[in-house]
Every structure is written in structure tokens, then in C-alpha cells.
Image (cartoon, helix red, strand yellow):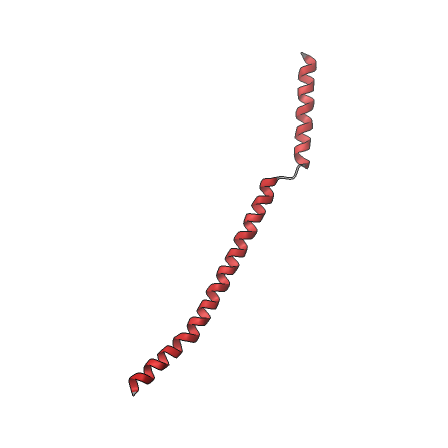
Length: 72
């Protein structure tokens, strides 16, 4: 009976020590999700910035055209 308890304790300690050396898959997956999130946020920011620039370029042209057509 004592040998069974001792062997279970040895296996438990061995598994506990082994758990520190095993690569954590969830940690790796979490890093990938975080990187994807950052990339998506950067892409969204760049797209919004480009849309704003396009709107600024197109809006004054539309107003100028409307003003010219109203003056004639």
C-alpha cells in the first residue's frame, strides 16, 4: 500500500515538473489572437484615414461644381 502511494506521489511530482517545460498551446493561441486584433485595428485605422482623405478631396469639388452651376 505504501509503495502505491509513493509511486503515485512520484508520478505526480514528475508530471508537475514536466508541466513547466511543456509549451502552452493556449498561450500561443492567445498571442496569435492578440496579433490578429492589433493588425485588424491598424487596417481599420488606415482605411478610415484614407476614406477621410478621399471625402475631403471629393467634397470641395462637389461644392464648387454646385456653386458654379447655380451661378449660371
